[in-house]
Length: 326
Image 1: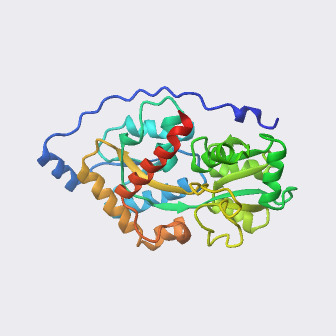
Image 2: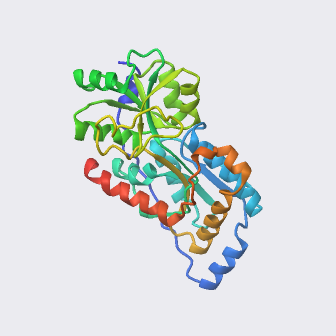
């Protein structure tokens, strides 16, 4: 079995979150918000360099530096399907100076799959910076020319096909689980730390396929002919792959949650005025040419997705996935 060590389920992470006192002086909070940021800021990216999480985090860090006139230091803290980075956020002072670039999976899935001392209610959501559909792809020299070929082989030999995913608790990984539970097609998900590592394993011939967000890390080798897209995991076809069918089109009803979203979060005890200031700045980034170019026009939502909408997406996904991990 190739890369057998990758098949070991991520162990339970022991997380000790120190209690943090919230500020109770309303006047002081308002003053802090006016003065924020008053010191160097941190942008935690809970995945390895490469991939859209990293790109979005760095682009937003640069914009915050310009917009808020303060240095923002970027730190990649991969591991535990984002739990390492999120634990660092939640053990930092809840003053808005430490931000993490999260995903729906960071909060809707990771805390449920691992024995963690936090959940989606322990962060405050700033808004979304980027969005991408999921894609199922194989190597260009793969024997599987179409999605039908791939799924037929999976049905003939359940669990034999290995599919790289960018983390155990990601929407694309969970869609593989739902494909097994709801449609009887058993695939073995192999979690890696981020899009770039997962793509590298497929390009290196170490797995049979990849289920990952359709970011530049994946799109470029598809466009260059090194990978072949079999299916899009979203509610509709992607403008980036107009000739590639969705899983629903192929008969796998309900498998539309493979989209990935990326957005900043702060500690839940951060004063609301500071969270709102970060949200207002993020909304301004949507109109910033440099920010849009760095992330890619195709990945920025057509309309601003604020913190409340981001939180709602996480809560809806958490409700759907909860029965699967009980």
